[in-house]
Every structure is written in structure tokens, then in C-alpha cells.
Image (cartoon, rainbow, N blue to C red; front, side, top):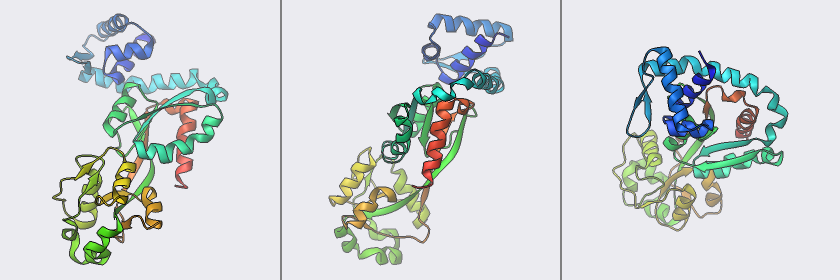
Length: 298
């Protein structure tokens, strides 16, 4: 079976689109369509279902992709093994959440950039980042969702501690952490909530882990950047659940206060995800290793 056809097939499977696969391969869309049809004739079964937008693999196509992709990736490892000395000059496309990427990932990668690595960053939500990784838009993604796609692999990177914070005036108004420990979440009912997402994932996780409850709250402010959420907290708008590393300076300065310090603080785990086999590429492996090494000091 022609390896070029299999490479095109795996690219389409990962991209979910003939058009996107053509862009990734540097081919025309008709050429990609022709190659997939040729492979389907050889297999004797349809490999993709044509949808109004893109394609979806048939069970046969899905099975073939999972059997073939690791071997194609291994061949890629062999052909690119001589790039190790030049890997500092390669361009890596990374996707991740705005605050964590800005304050943790990018500073960690500064030494590699100084050595010649070129970075292209997409500040994206979880689903968008993983979809872009699977489709070949990104080489590596960072997020708190472990991918379910067997063609993606994830490594736990870091556990982020969550803290419930508000301006000092709000802490005084409710009677401090002792009142929250004594009376529970109902003490917090009158404090406006600030969230980076309408669904309030951090608030929901905190309430579940600490109070064993679901918050009956509608956010007063929704802004899709945790740094902006912190600014709202400091300005006295209300309370928010934030990563400790983000708000520790404000707490030390007295601009924000922890409304509660539970014995076991809620954590959320960040993962570094790549397409299966691509850690064989030196520039991706170096970035992955640098992130893992740096996370020990966060």
C-alpha cells in the first residue's frame, strides 16, 4: 500500500477536513480527494463520511487510522532524526489558556527562544486547543482537559492550587474565614461573583470540593482572562476563585484576602498534549522537556 496515500489518509483523519489536510500537506484539495478515493478502492470500503462541513471517519477508517498512524509517526522520527542540531531554529505552534500560557509557559520557554526556537502562540480555550492540535494547527497544547482521542497523548504538567479571594472589605463584611468555616457557603451568598466563563468552572469546582455543594449563583461579571478577574477582585467588585500563583502578590500586599483556607485546597491539573509520535521531533521534544523541567519550580 502506497505510503503517500496513507500519509494523506492520516492527515485527513486528524484534520477532519479535506481542505485543511490539503493545506497541511501542501496539496490541492482535488489531489487529496483523489488519493483518498484511491485508498478506499484499495481497501474496498469507505473510509470517511462526507459531512456538510468536513468529514468523519467510518468505523473502518477509524480503525485503520489507529493502526497506521503510529507507524507513520515512527517513520517520521527516522526521517527527522538528523534535525536535532537544528531543532533550535524550528518553529513550534503552541496553544494554551491566556493566563497560564502568559505567566508560566512562555517564561519557561524563554531559554529555547534565546537559542533560536521560533514560537507561534494561540491563546485558546480547552476544546479549541485540542481540536487544533488534532487537526495539525498546533504542535503542542496546554490545558486542564486530558484528551480522549487515542491519536493524542497527554502528560500531567502541574497541579494548580485554587483560592477563594475578595477585597478586604468583603472579608470584613462576612466576618472573615471563621464565619465561612462555621456557617458554610451561605455566608457568601450576597457577594457578587466574578468569573472568566459564564459556566463558572472554577467556582463550581471549588464549591464541590470544599462545600460539597453546587453554587446557586449567577456571575455578576464575566471576563475571559483571569488577570482581569483579579483586577476586578482588587477593585472590590466581588469574589472569585483564582490560582494562588496569580493572586499571591495581591494577598501579600493586602489588596485581596482569602475568604477561606481549607485544609486541602482544590487543585486542577494541567496537561501537555501532543499528537501521538510527534515527541520524536526534536523541537517538540525540547519544548515538552523544558516545560516539564520548569514546572518543578512553579
